Amino acid sequence: MTRVLIPLWNEDVAPRFDLAQEALVALLGENREIAEKQIIVLPQASAEALCDFIIRERVDLVVCCAVDEECYQYLTWKKIKIFDSVGGSAADVLERVRDGSLRSGDMVL
Amino acid sequence: MNATVWPLIEGLGDQSIELLQLMDEIPMGILIIDSAYRVALMNRAIAALTGYAPAEALGLPCHYVLRSNLCTTGCPVRQLTERGMSLRGDANMVNRSREKIPVRFTASVVKGSGGALIGYLKTVEDMRYLQRPDGMEARALFGRLIGKSAAMENVSRVLPAIAETDSAVLITGETGTGKDYVAEALHNASPRSKGPFIKINCGALPESLLESELFGHQKGAFTGAVENKPGRFRLADKGTLYLTEIGDLPLNLQVKLLSFLDDRIIFPLGSTHGLPVDVRIIAGTHRDLEKMVAEGRFREDLLFRLNVVRLHLPPLAQREDDIDMLMDHFLQLLNARFKKMVSGFSPEARRILKSFHFPGNVRELRNMVEYAVNLCDGNEILVKHLPPYVVQHSAKNVRSSVKSSPEPSGVSRLSSIQTKPAGEWILPPAMEHLPWHEAERRMILDALLKARGQKAKAAEYLGWARSTLWRKMKSHGIMP
Image (cartoon, rainbow over all chains, first blue to last red; front, side):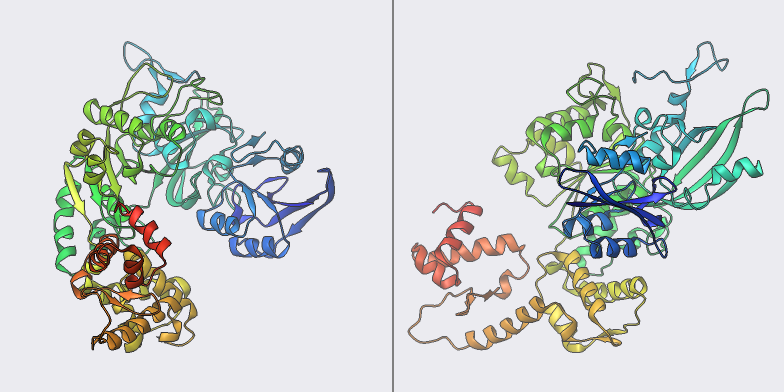
């Protein structure tokens, strides 16, 4: 099981991790099927709050666009995988996560 | 040049001029966005800022390239459509290297000759050189080098003159002495300060990737090279390229760097056409390059060319007079950062910090103060707020000094190393100012001498296991 989090801006990956006010959280099953999908509304846009949420919710993979080095290193240190500099529609990006073809820097447009 | 066809300007001269080429000459980020808010054209300065090559960014939504804090909260370009007038303001952006950069932007509408909206023009100026994290201005940058010790004054005195020249600079010094900071300060105080400051760690990437990262590549140069890549040299055009950990640059790339320093032309991977670039090189390393030259691991001719101006940053151990000043400076800085009201250090906490040897130099001192400020719940930093290893080190030193005063009878003791049963030792005063690496080497040699070459006995003197001594001898090049 893999828990994936994508910070959102409308239907797309948010351009900035620290300014996202919503996030898509999806649970991928053993066969990489989407077992669960929900949109979380964050109380405020904050990198610290989002990092805490990610740790608390035991997220395994974060897919985002711009994230600063401090957050990146913190999440990596917490053994959370990050694909950053990713852009496009969150649904398409999640599909690429599901089929295992997504990499950092991919623009799914 | 890129396979992409860039727009041309007609009528300015006998021949048409490539717009991008013209834009590249302007030392300020310029971005042209189409009416659907997608990148239509961007110059080299903004490529250096964002980390996206112009060809890569082409057609991408502007918010995925600029990644500014205004993109989702109040995009100035979208406001232009409503207001129809030019806008300017301050923002920050997070680039592909995950750096948060303060920027100043202007945005205006681009209209066709018939008055129809074609797109938008955005200029983006890097404000790092004006807005330092602590609000200090560029002219005071060298003033931020804190220290009144003779060693530091020697450095501070020559910096403004070095900044004014365009020569290559080699900055040496142990880890944590501030090489990166000095390199950036040199750039910001130089006539190239309006140009980009590009930093690359020569030890962080494998050779094949580093070559492409430095010199760029042509589309199709190797598997996966699906686009032209400009490389850091081209991104740093009219600015400064800071090659950190130059001692880790592979020999093969040392030749290419040498060739650039000779004729100022770079050859991207897969290209036979040289590209002239106007870049000042600053290199930094904690390694002993002369020793590496003697061992055949660094090219002597490259060292000669980089060594035009050499700046050695002293380790903190040689700046005893500066430690108090640095502690107070970091305390002030971190108070502001963490919104704390810590007024100072208790005399004992100060004594313990000052007696530490700081192998990690100023960076380590800063980290210690940060740790203490975080833990401090009152208005004074006490011993209990200091990192435990510093306090333990201090306690051991005291015990060791007491123990080592009278020489125990019948036990062979080292003359220059004070040993303790716990396997810890402190440096004799004569060695306190040596770099840690050198002091350790001398202690090993001293111990071996006293033990008449018997490694088991030398290890016992040093309080190490035999395997530790063997490993350290090997790392210091002392043949077992």
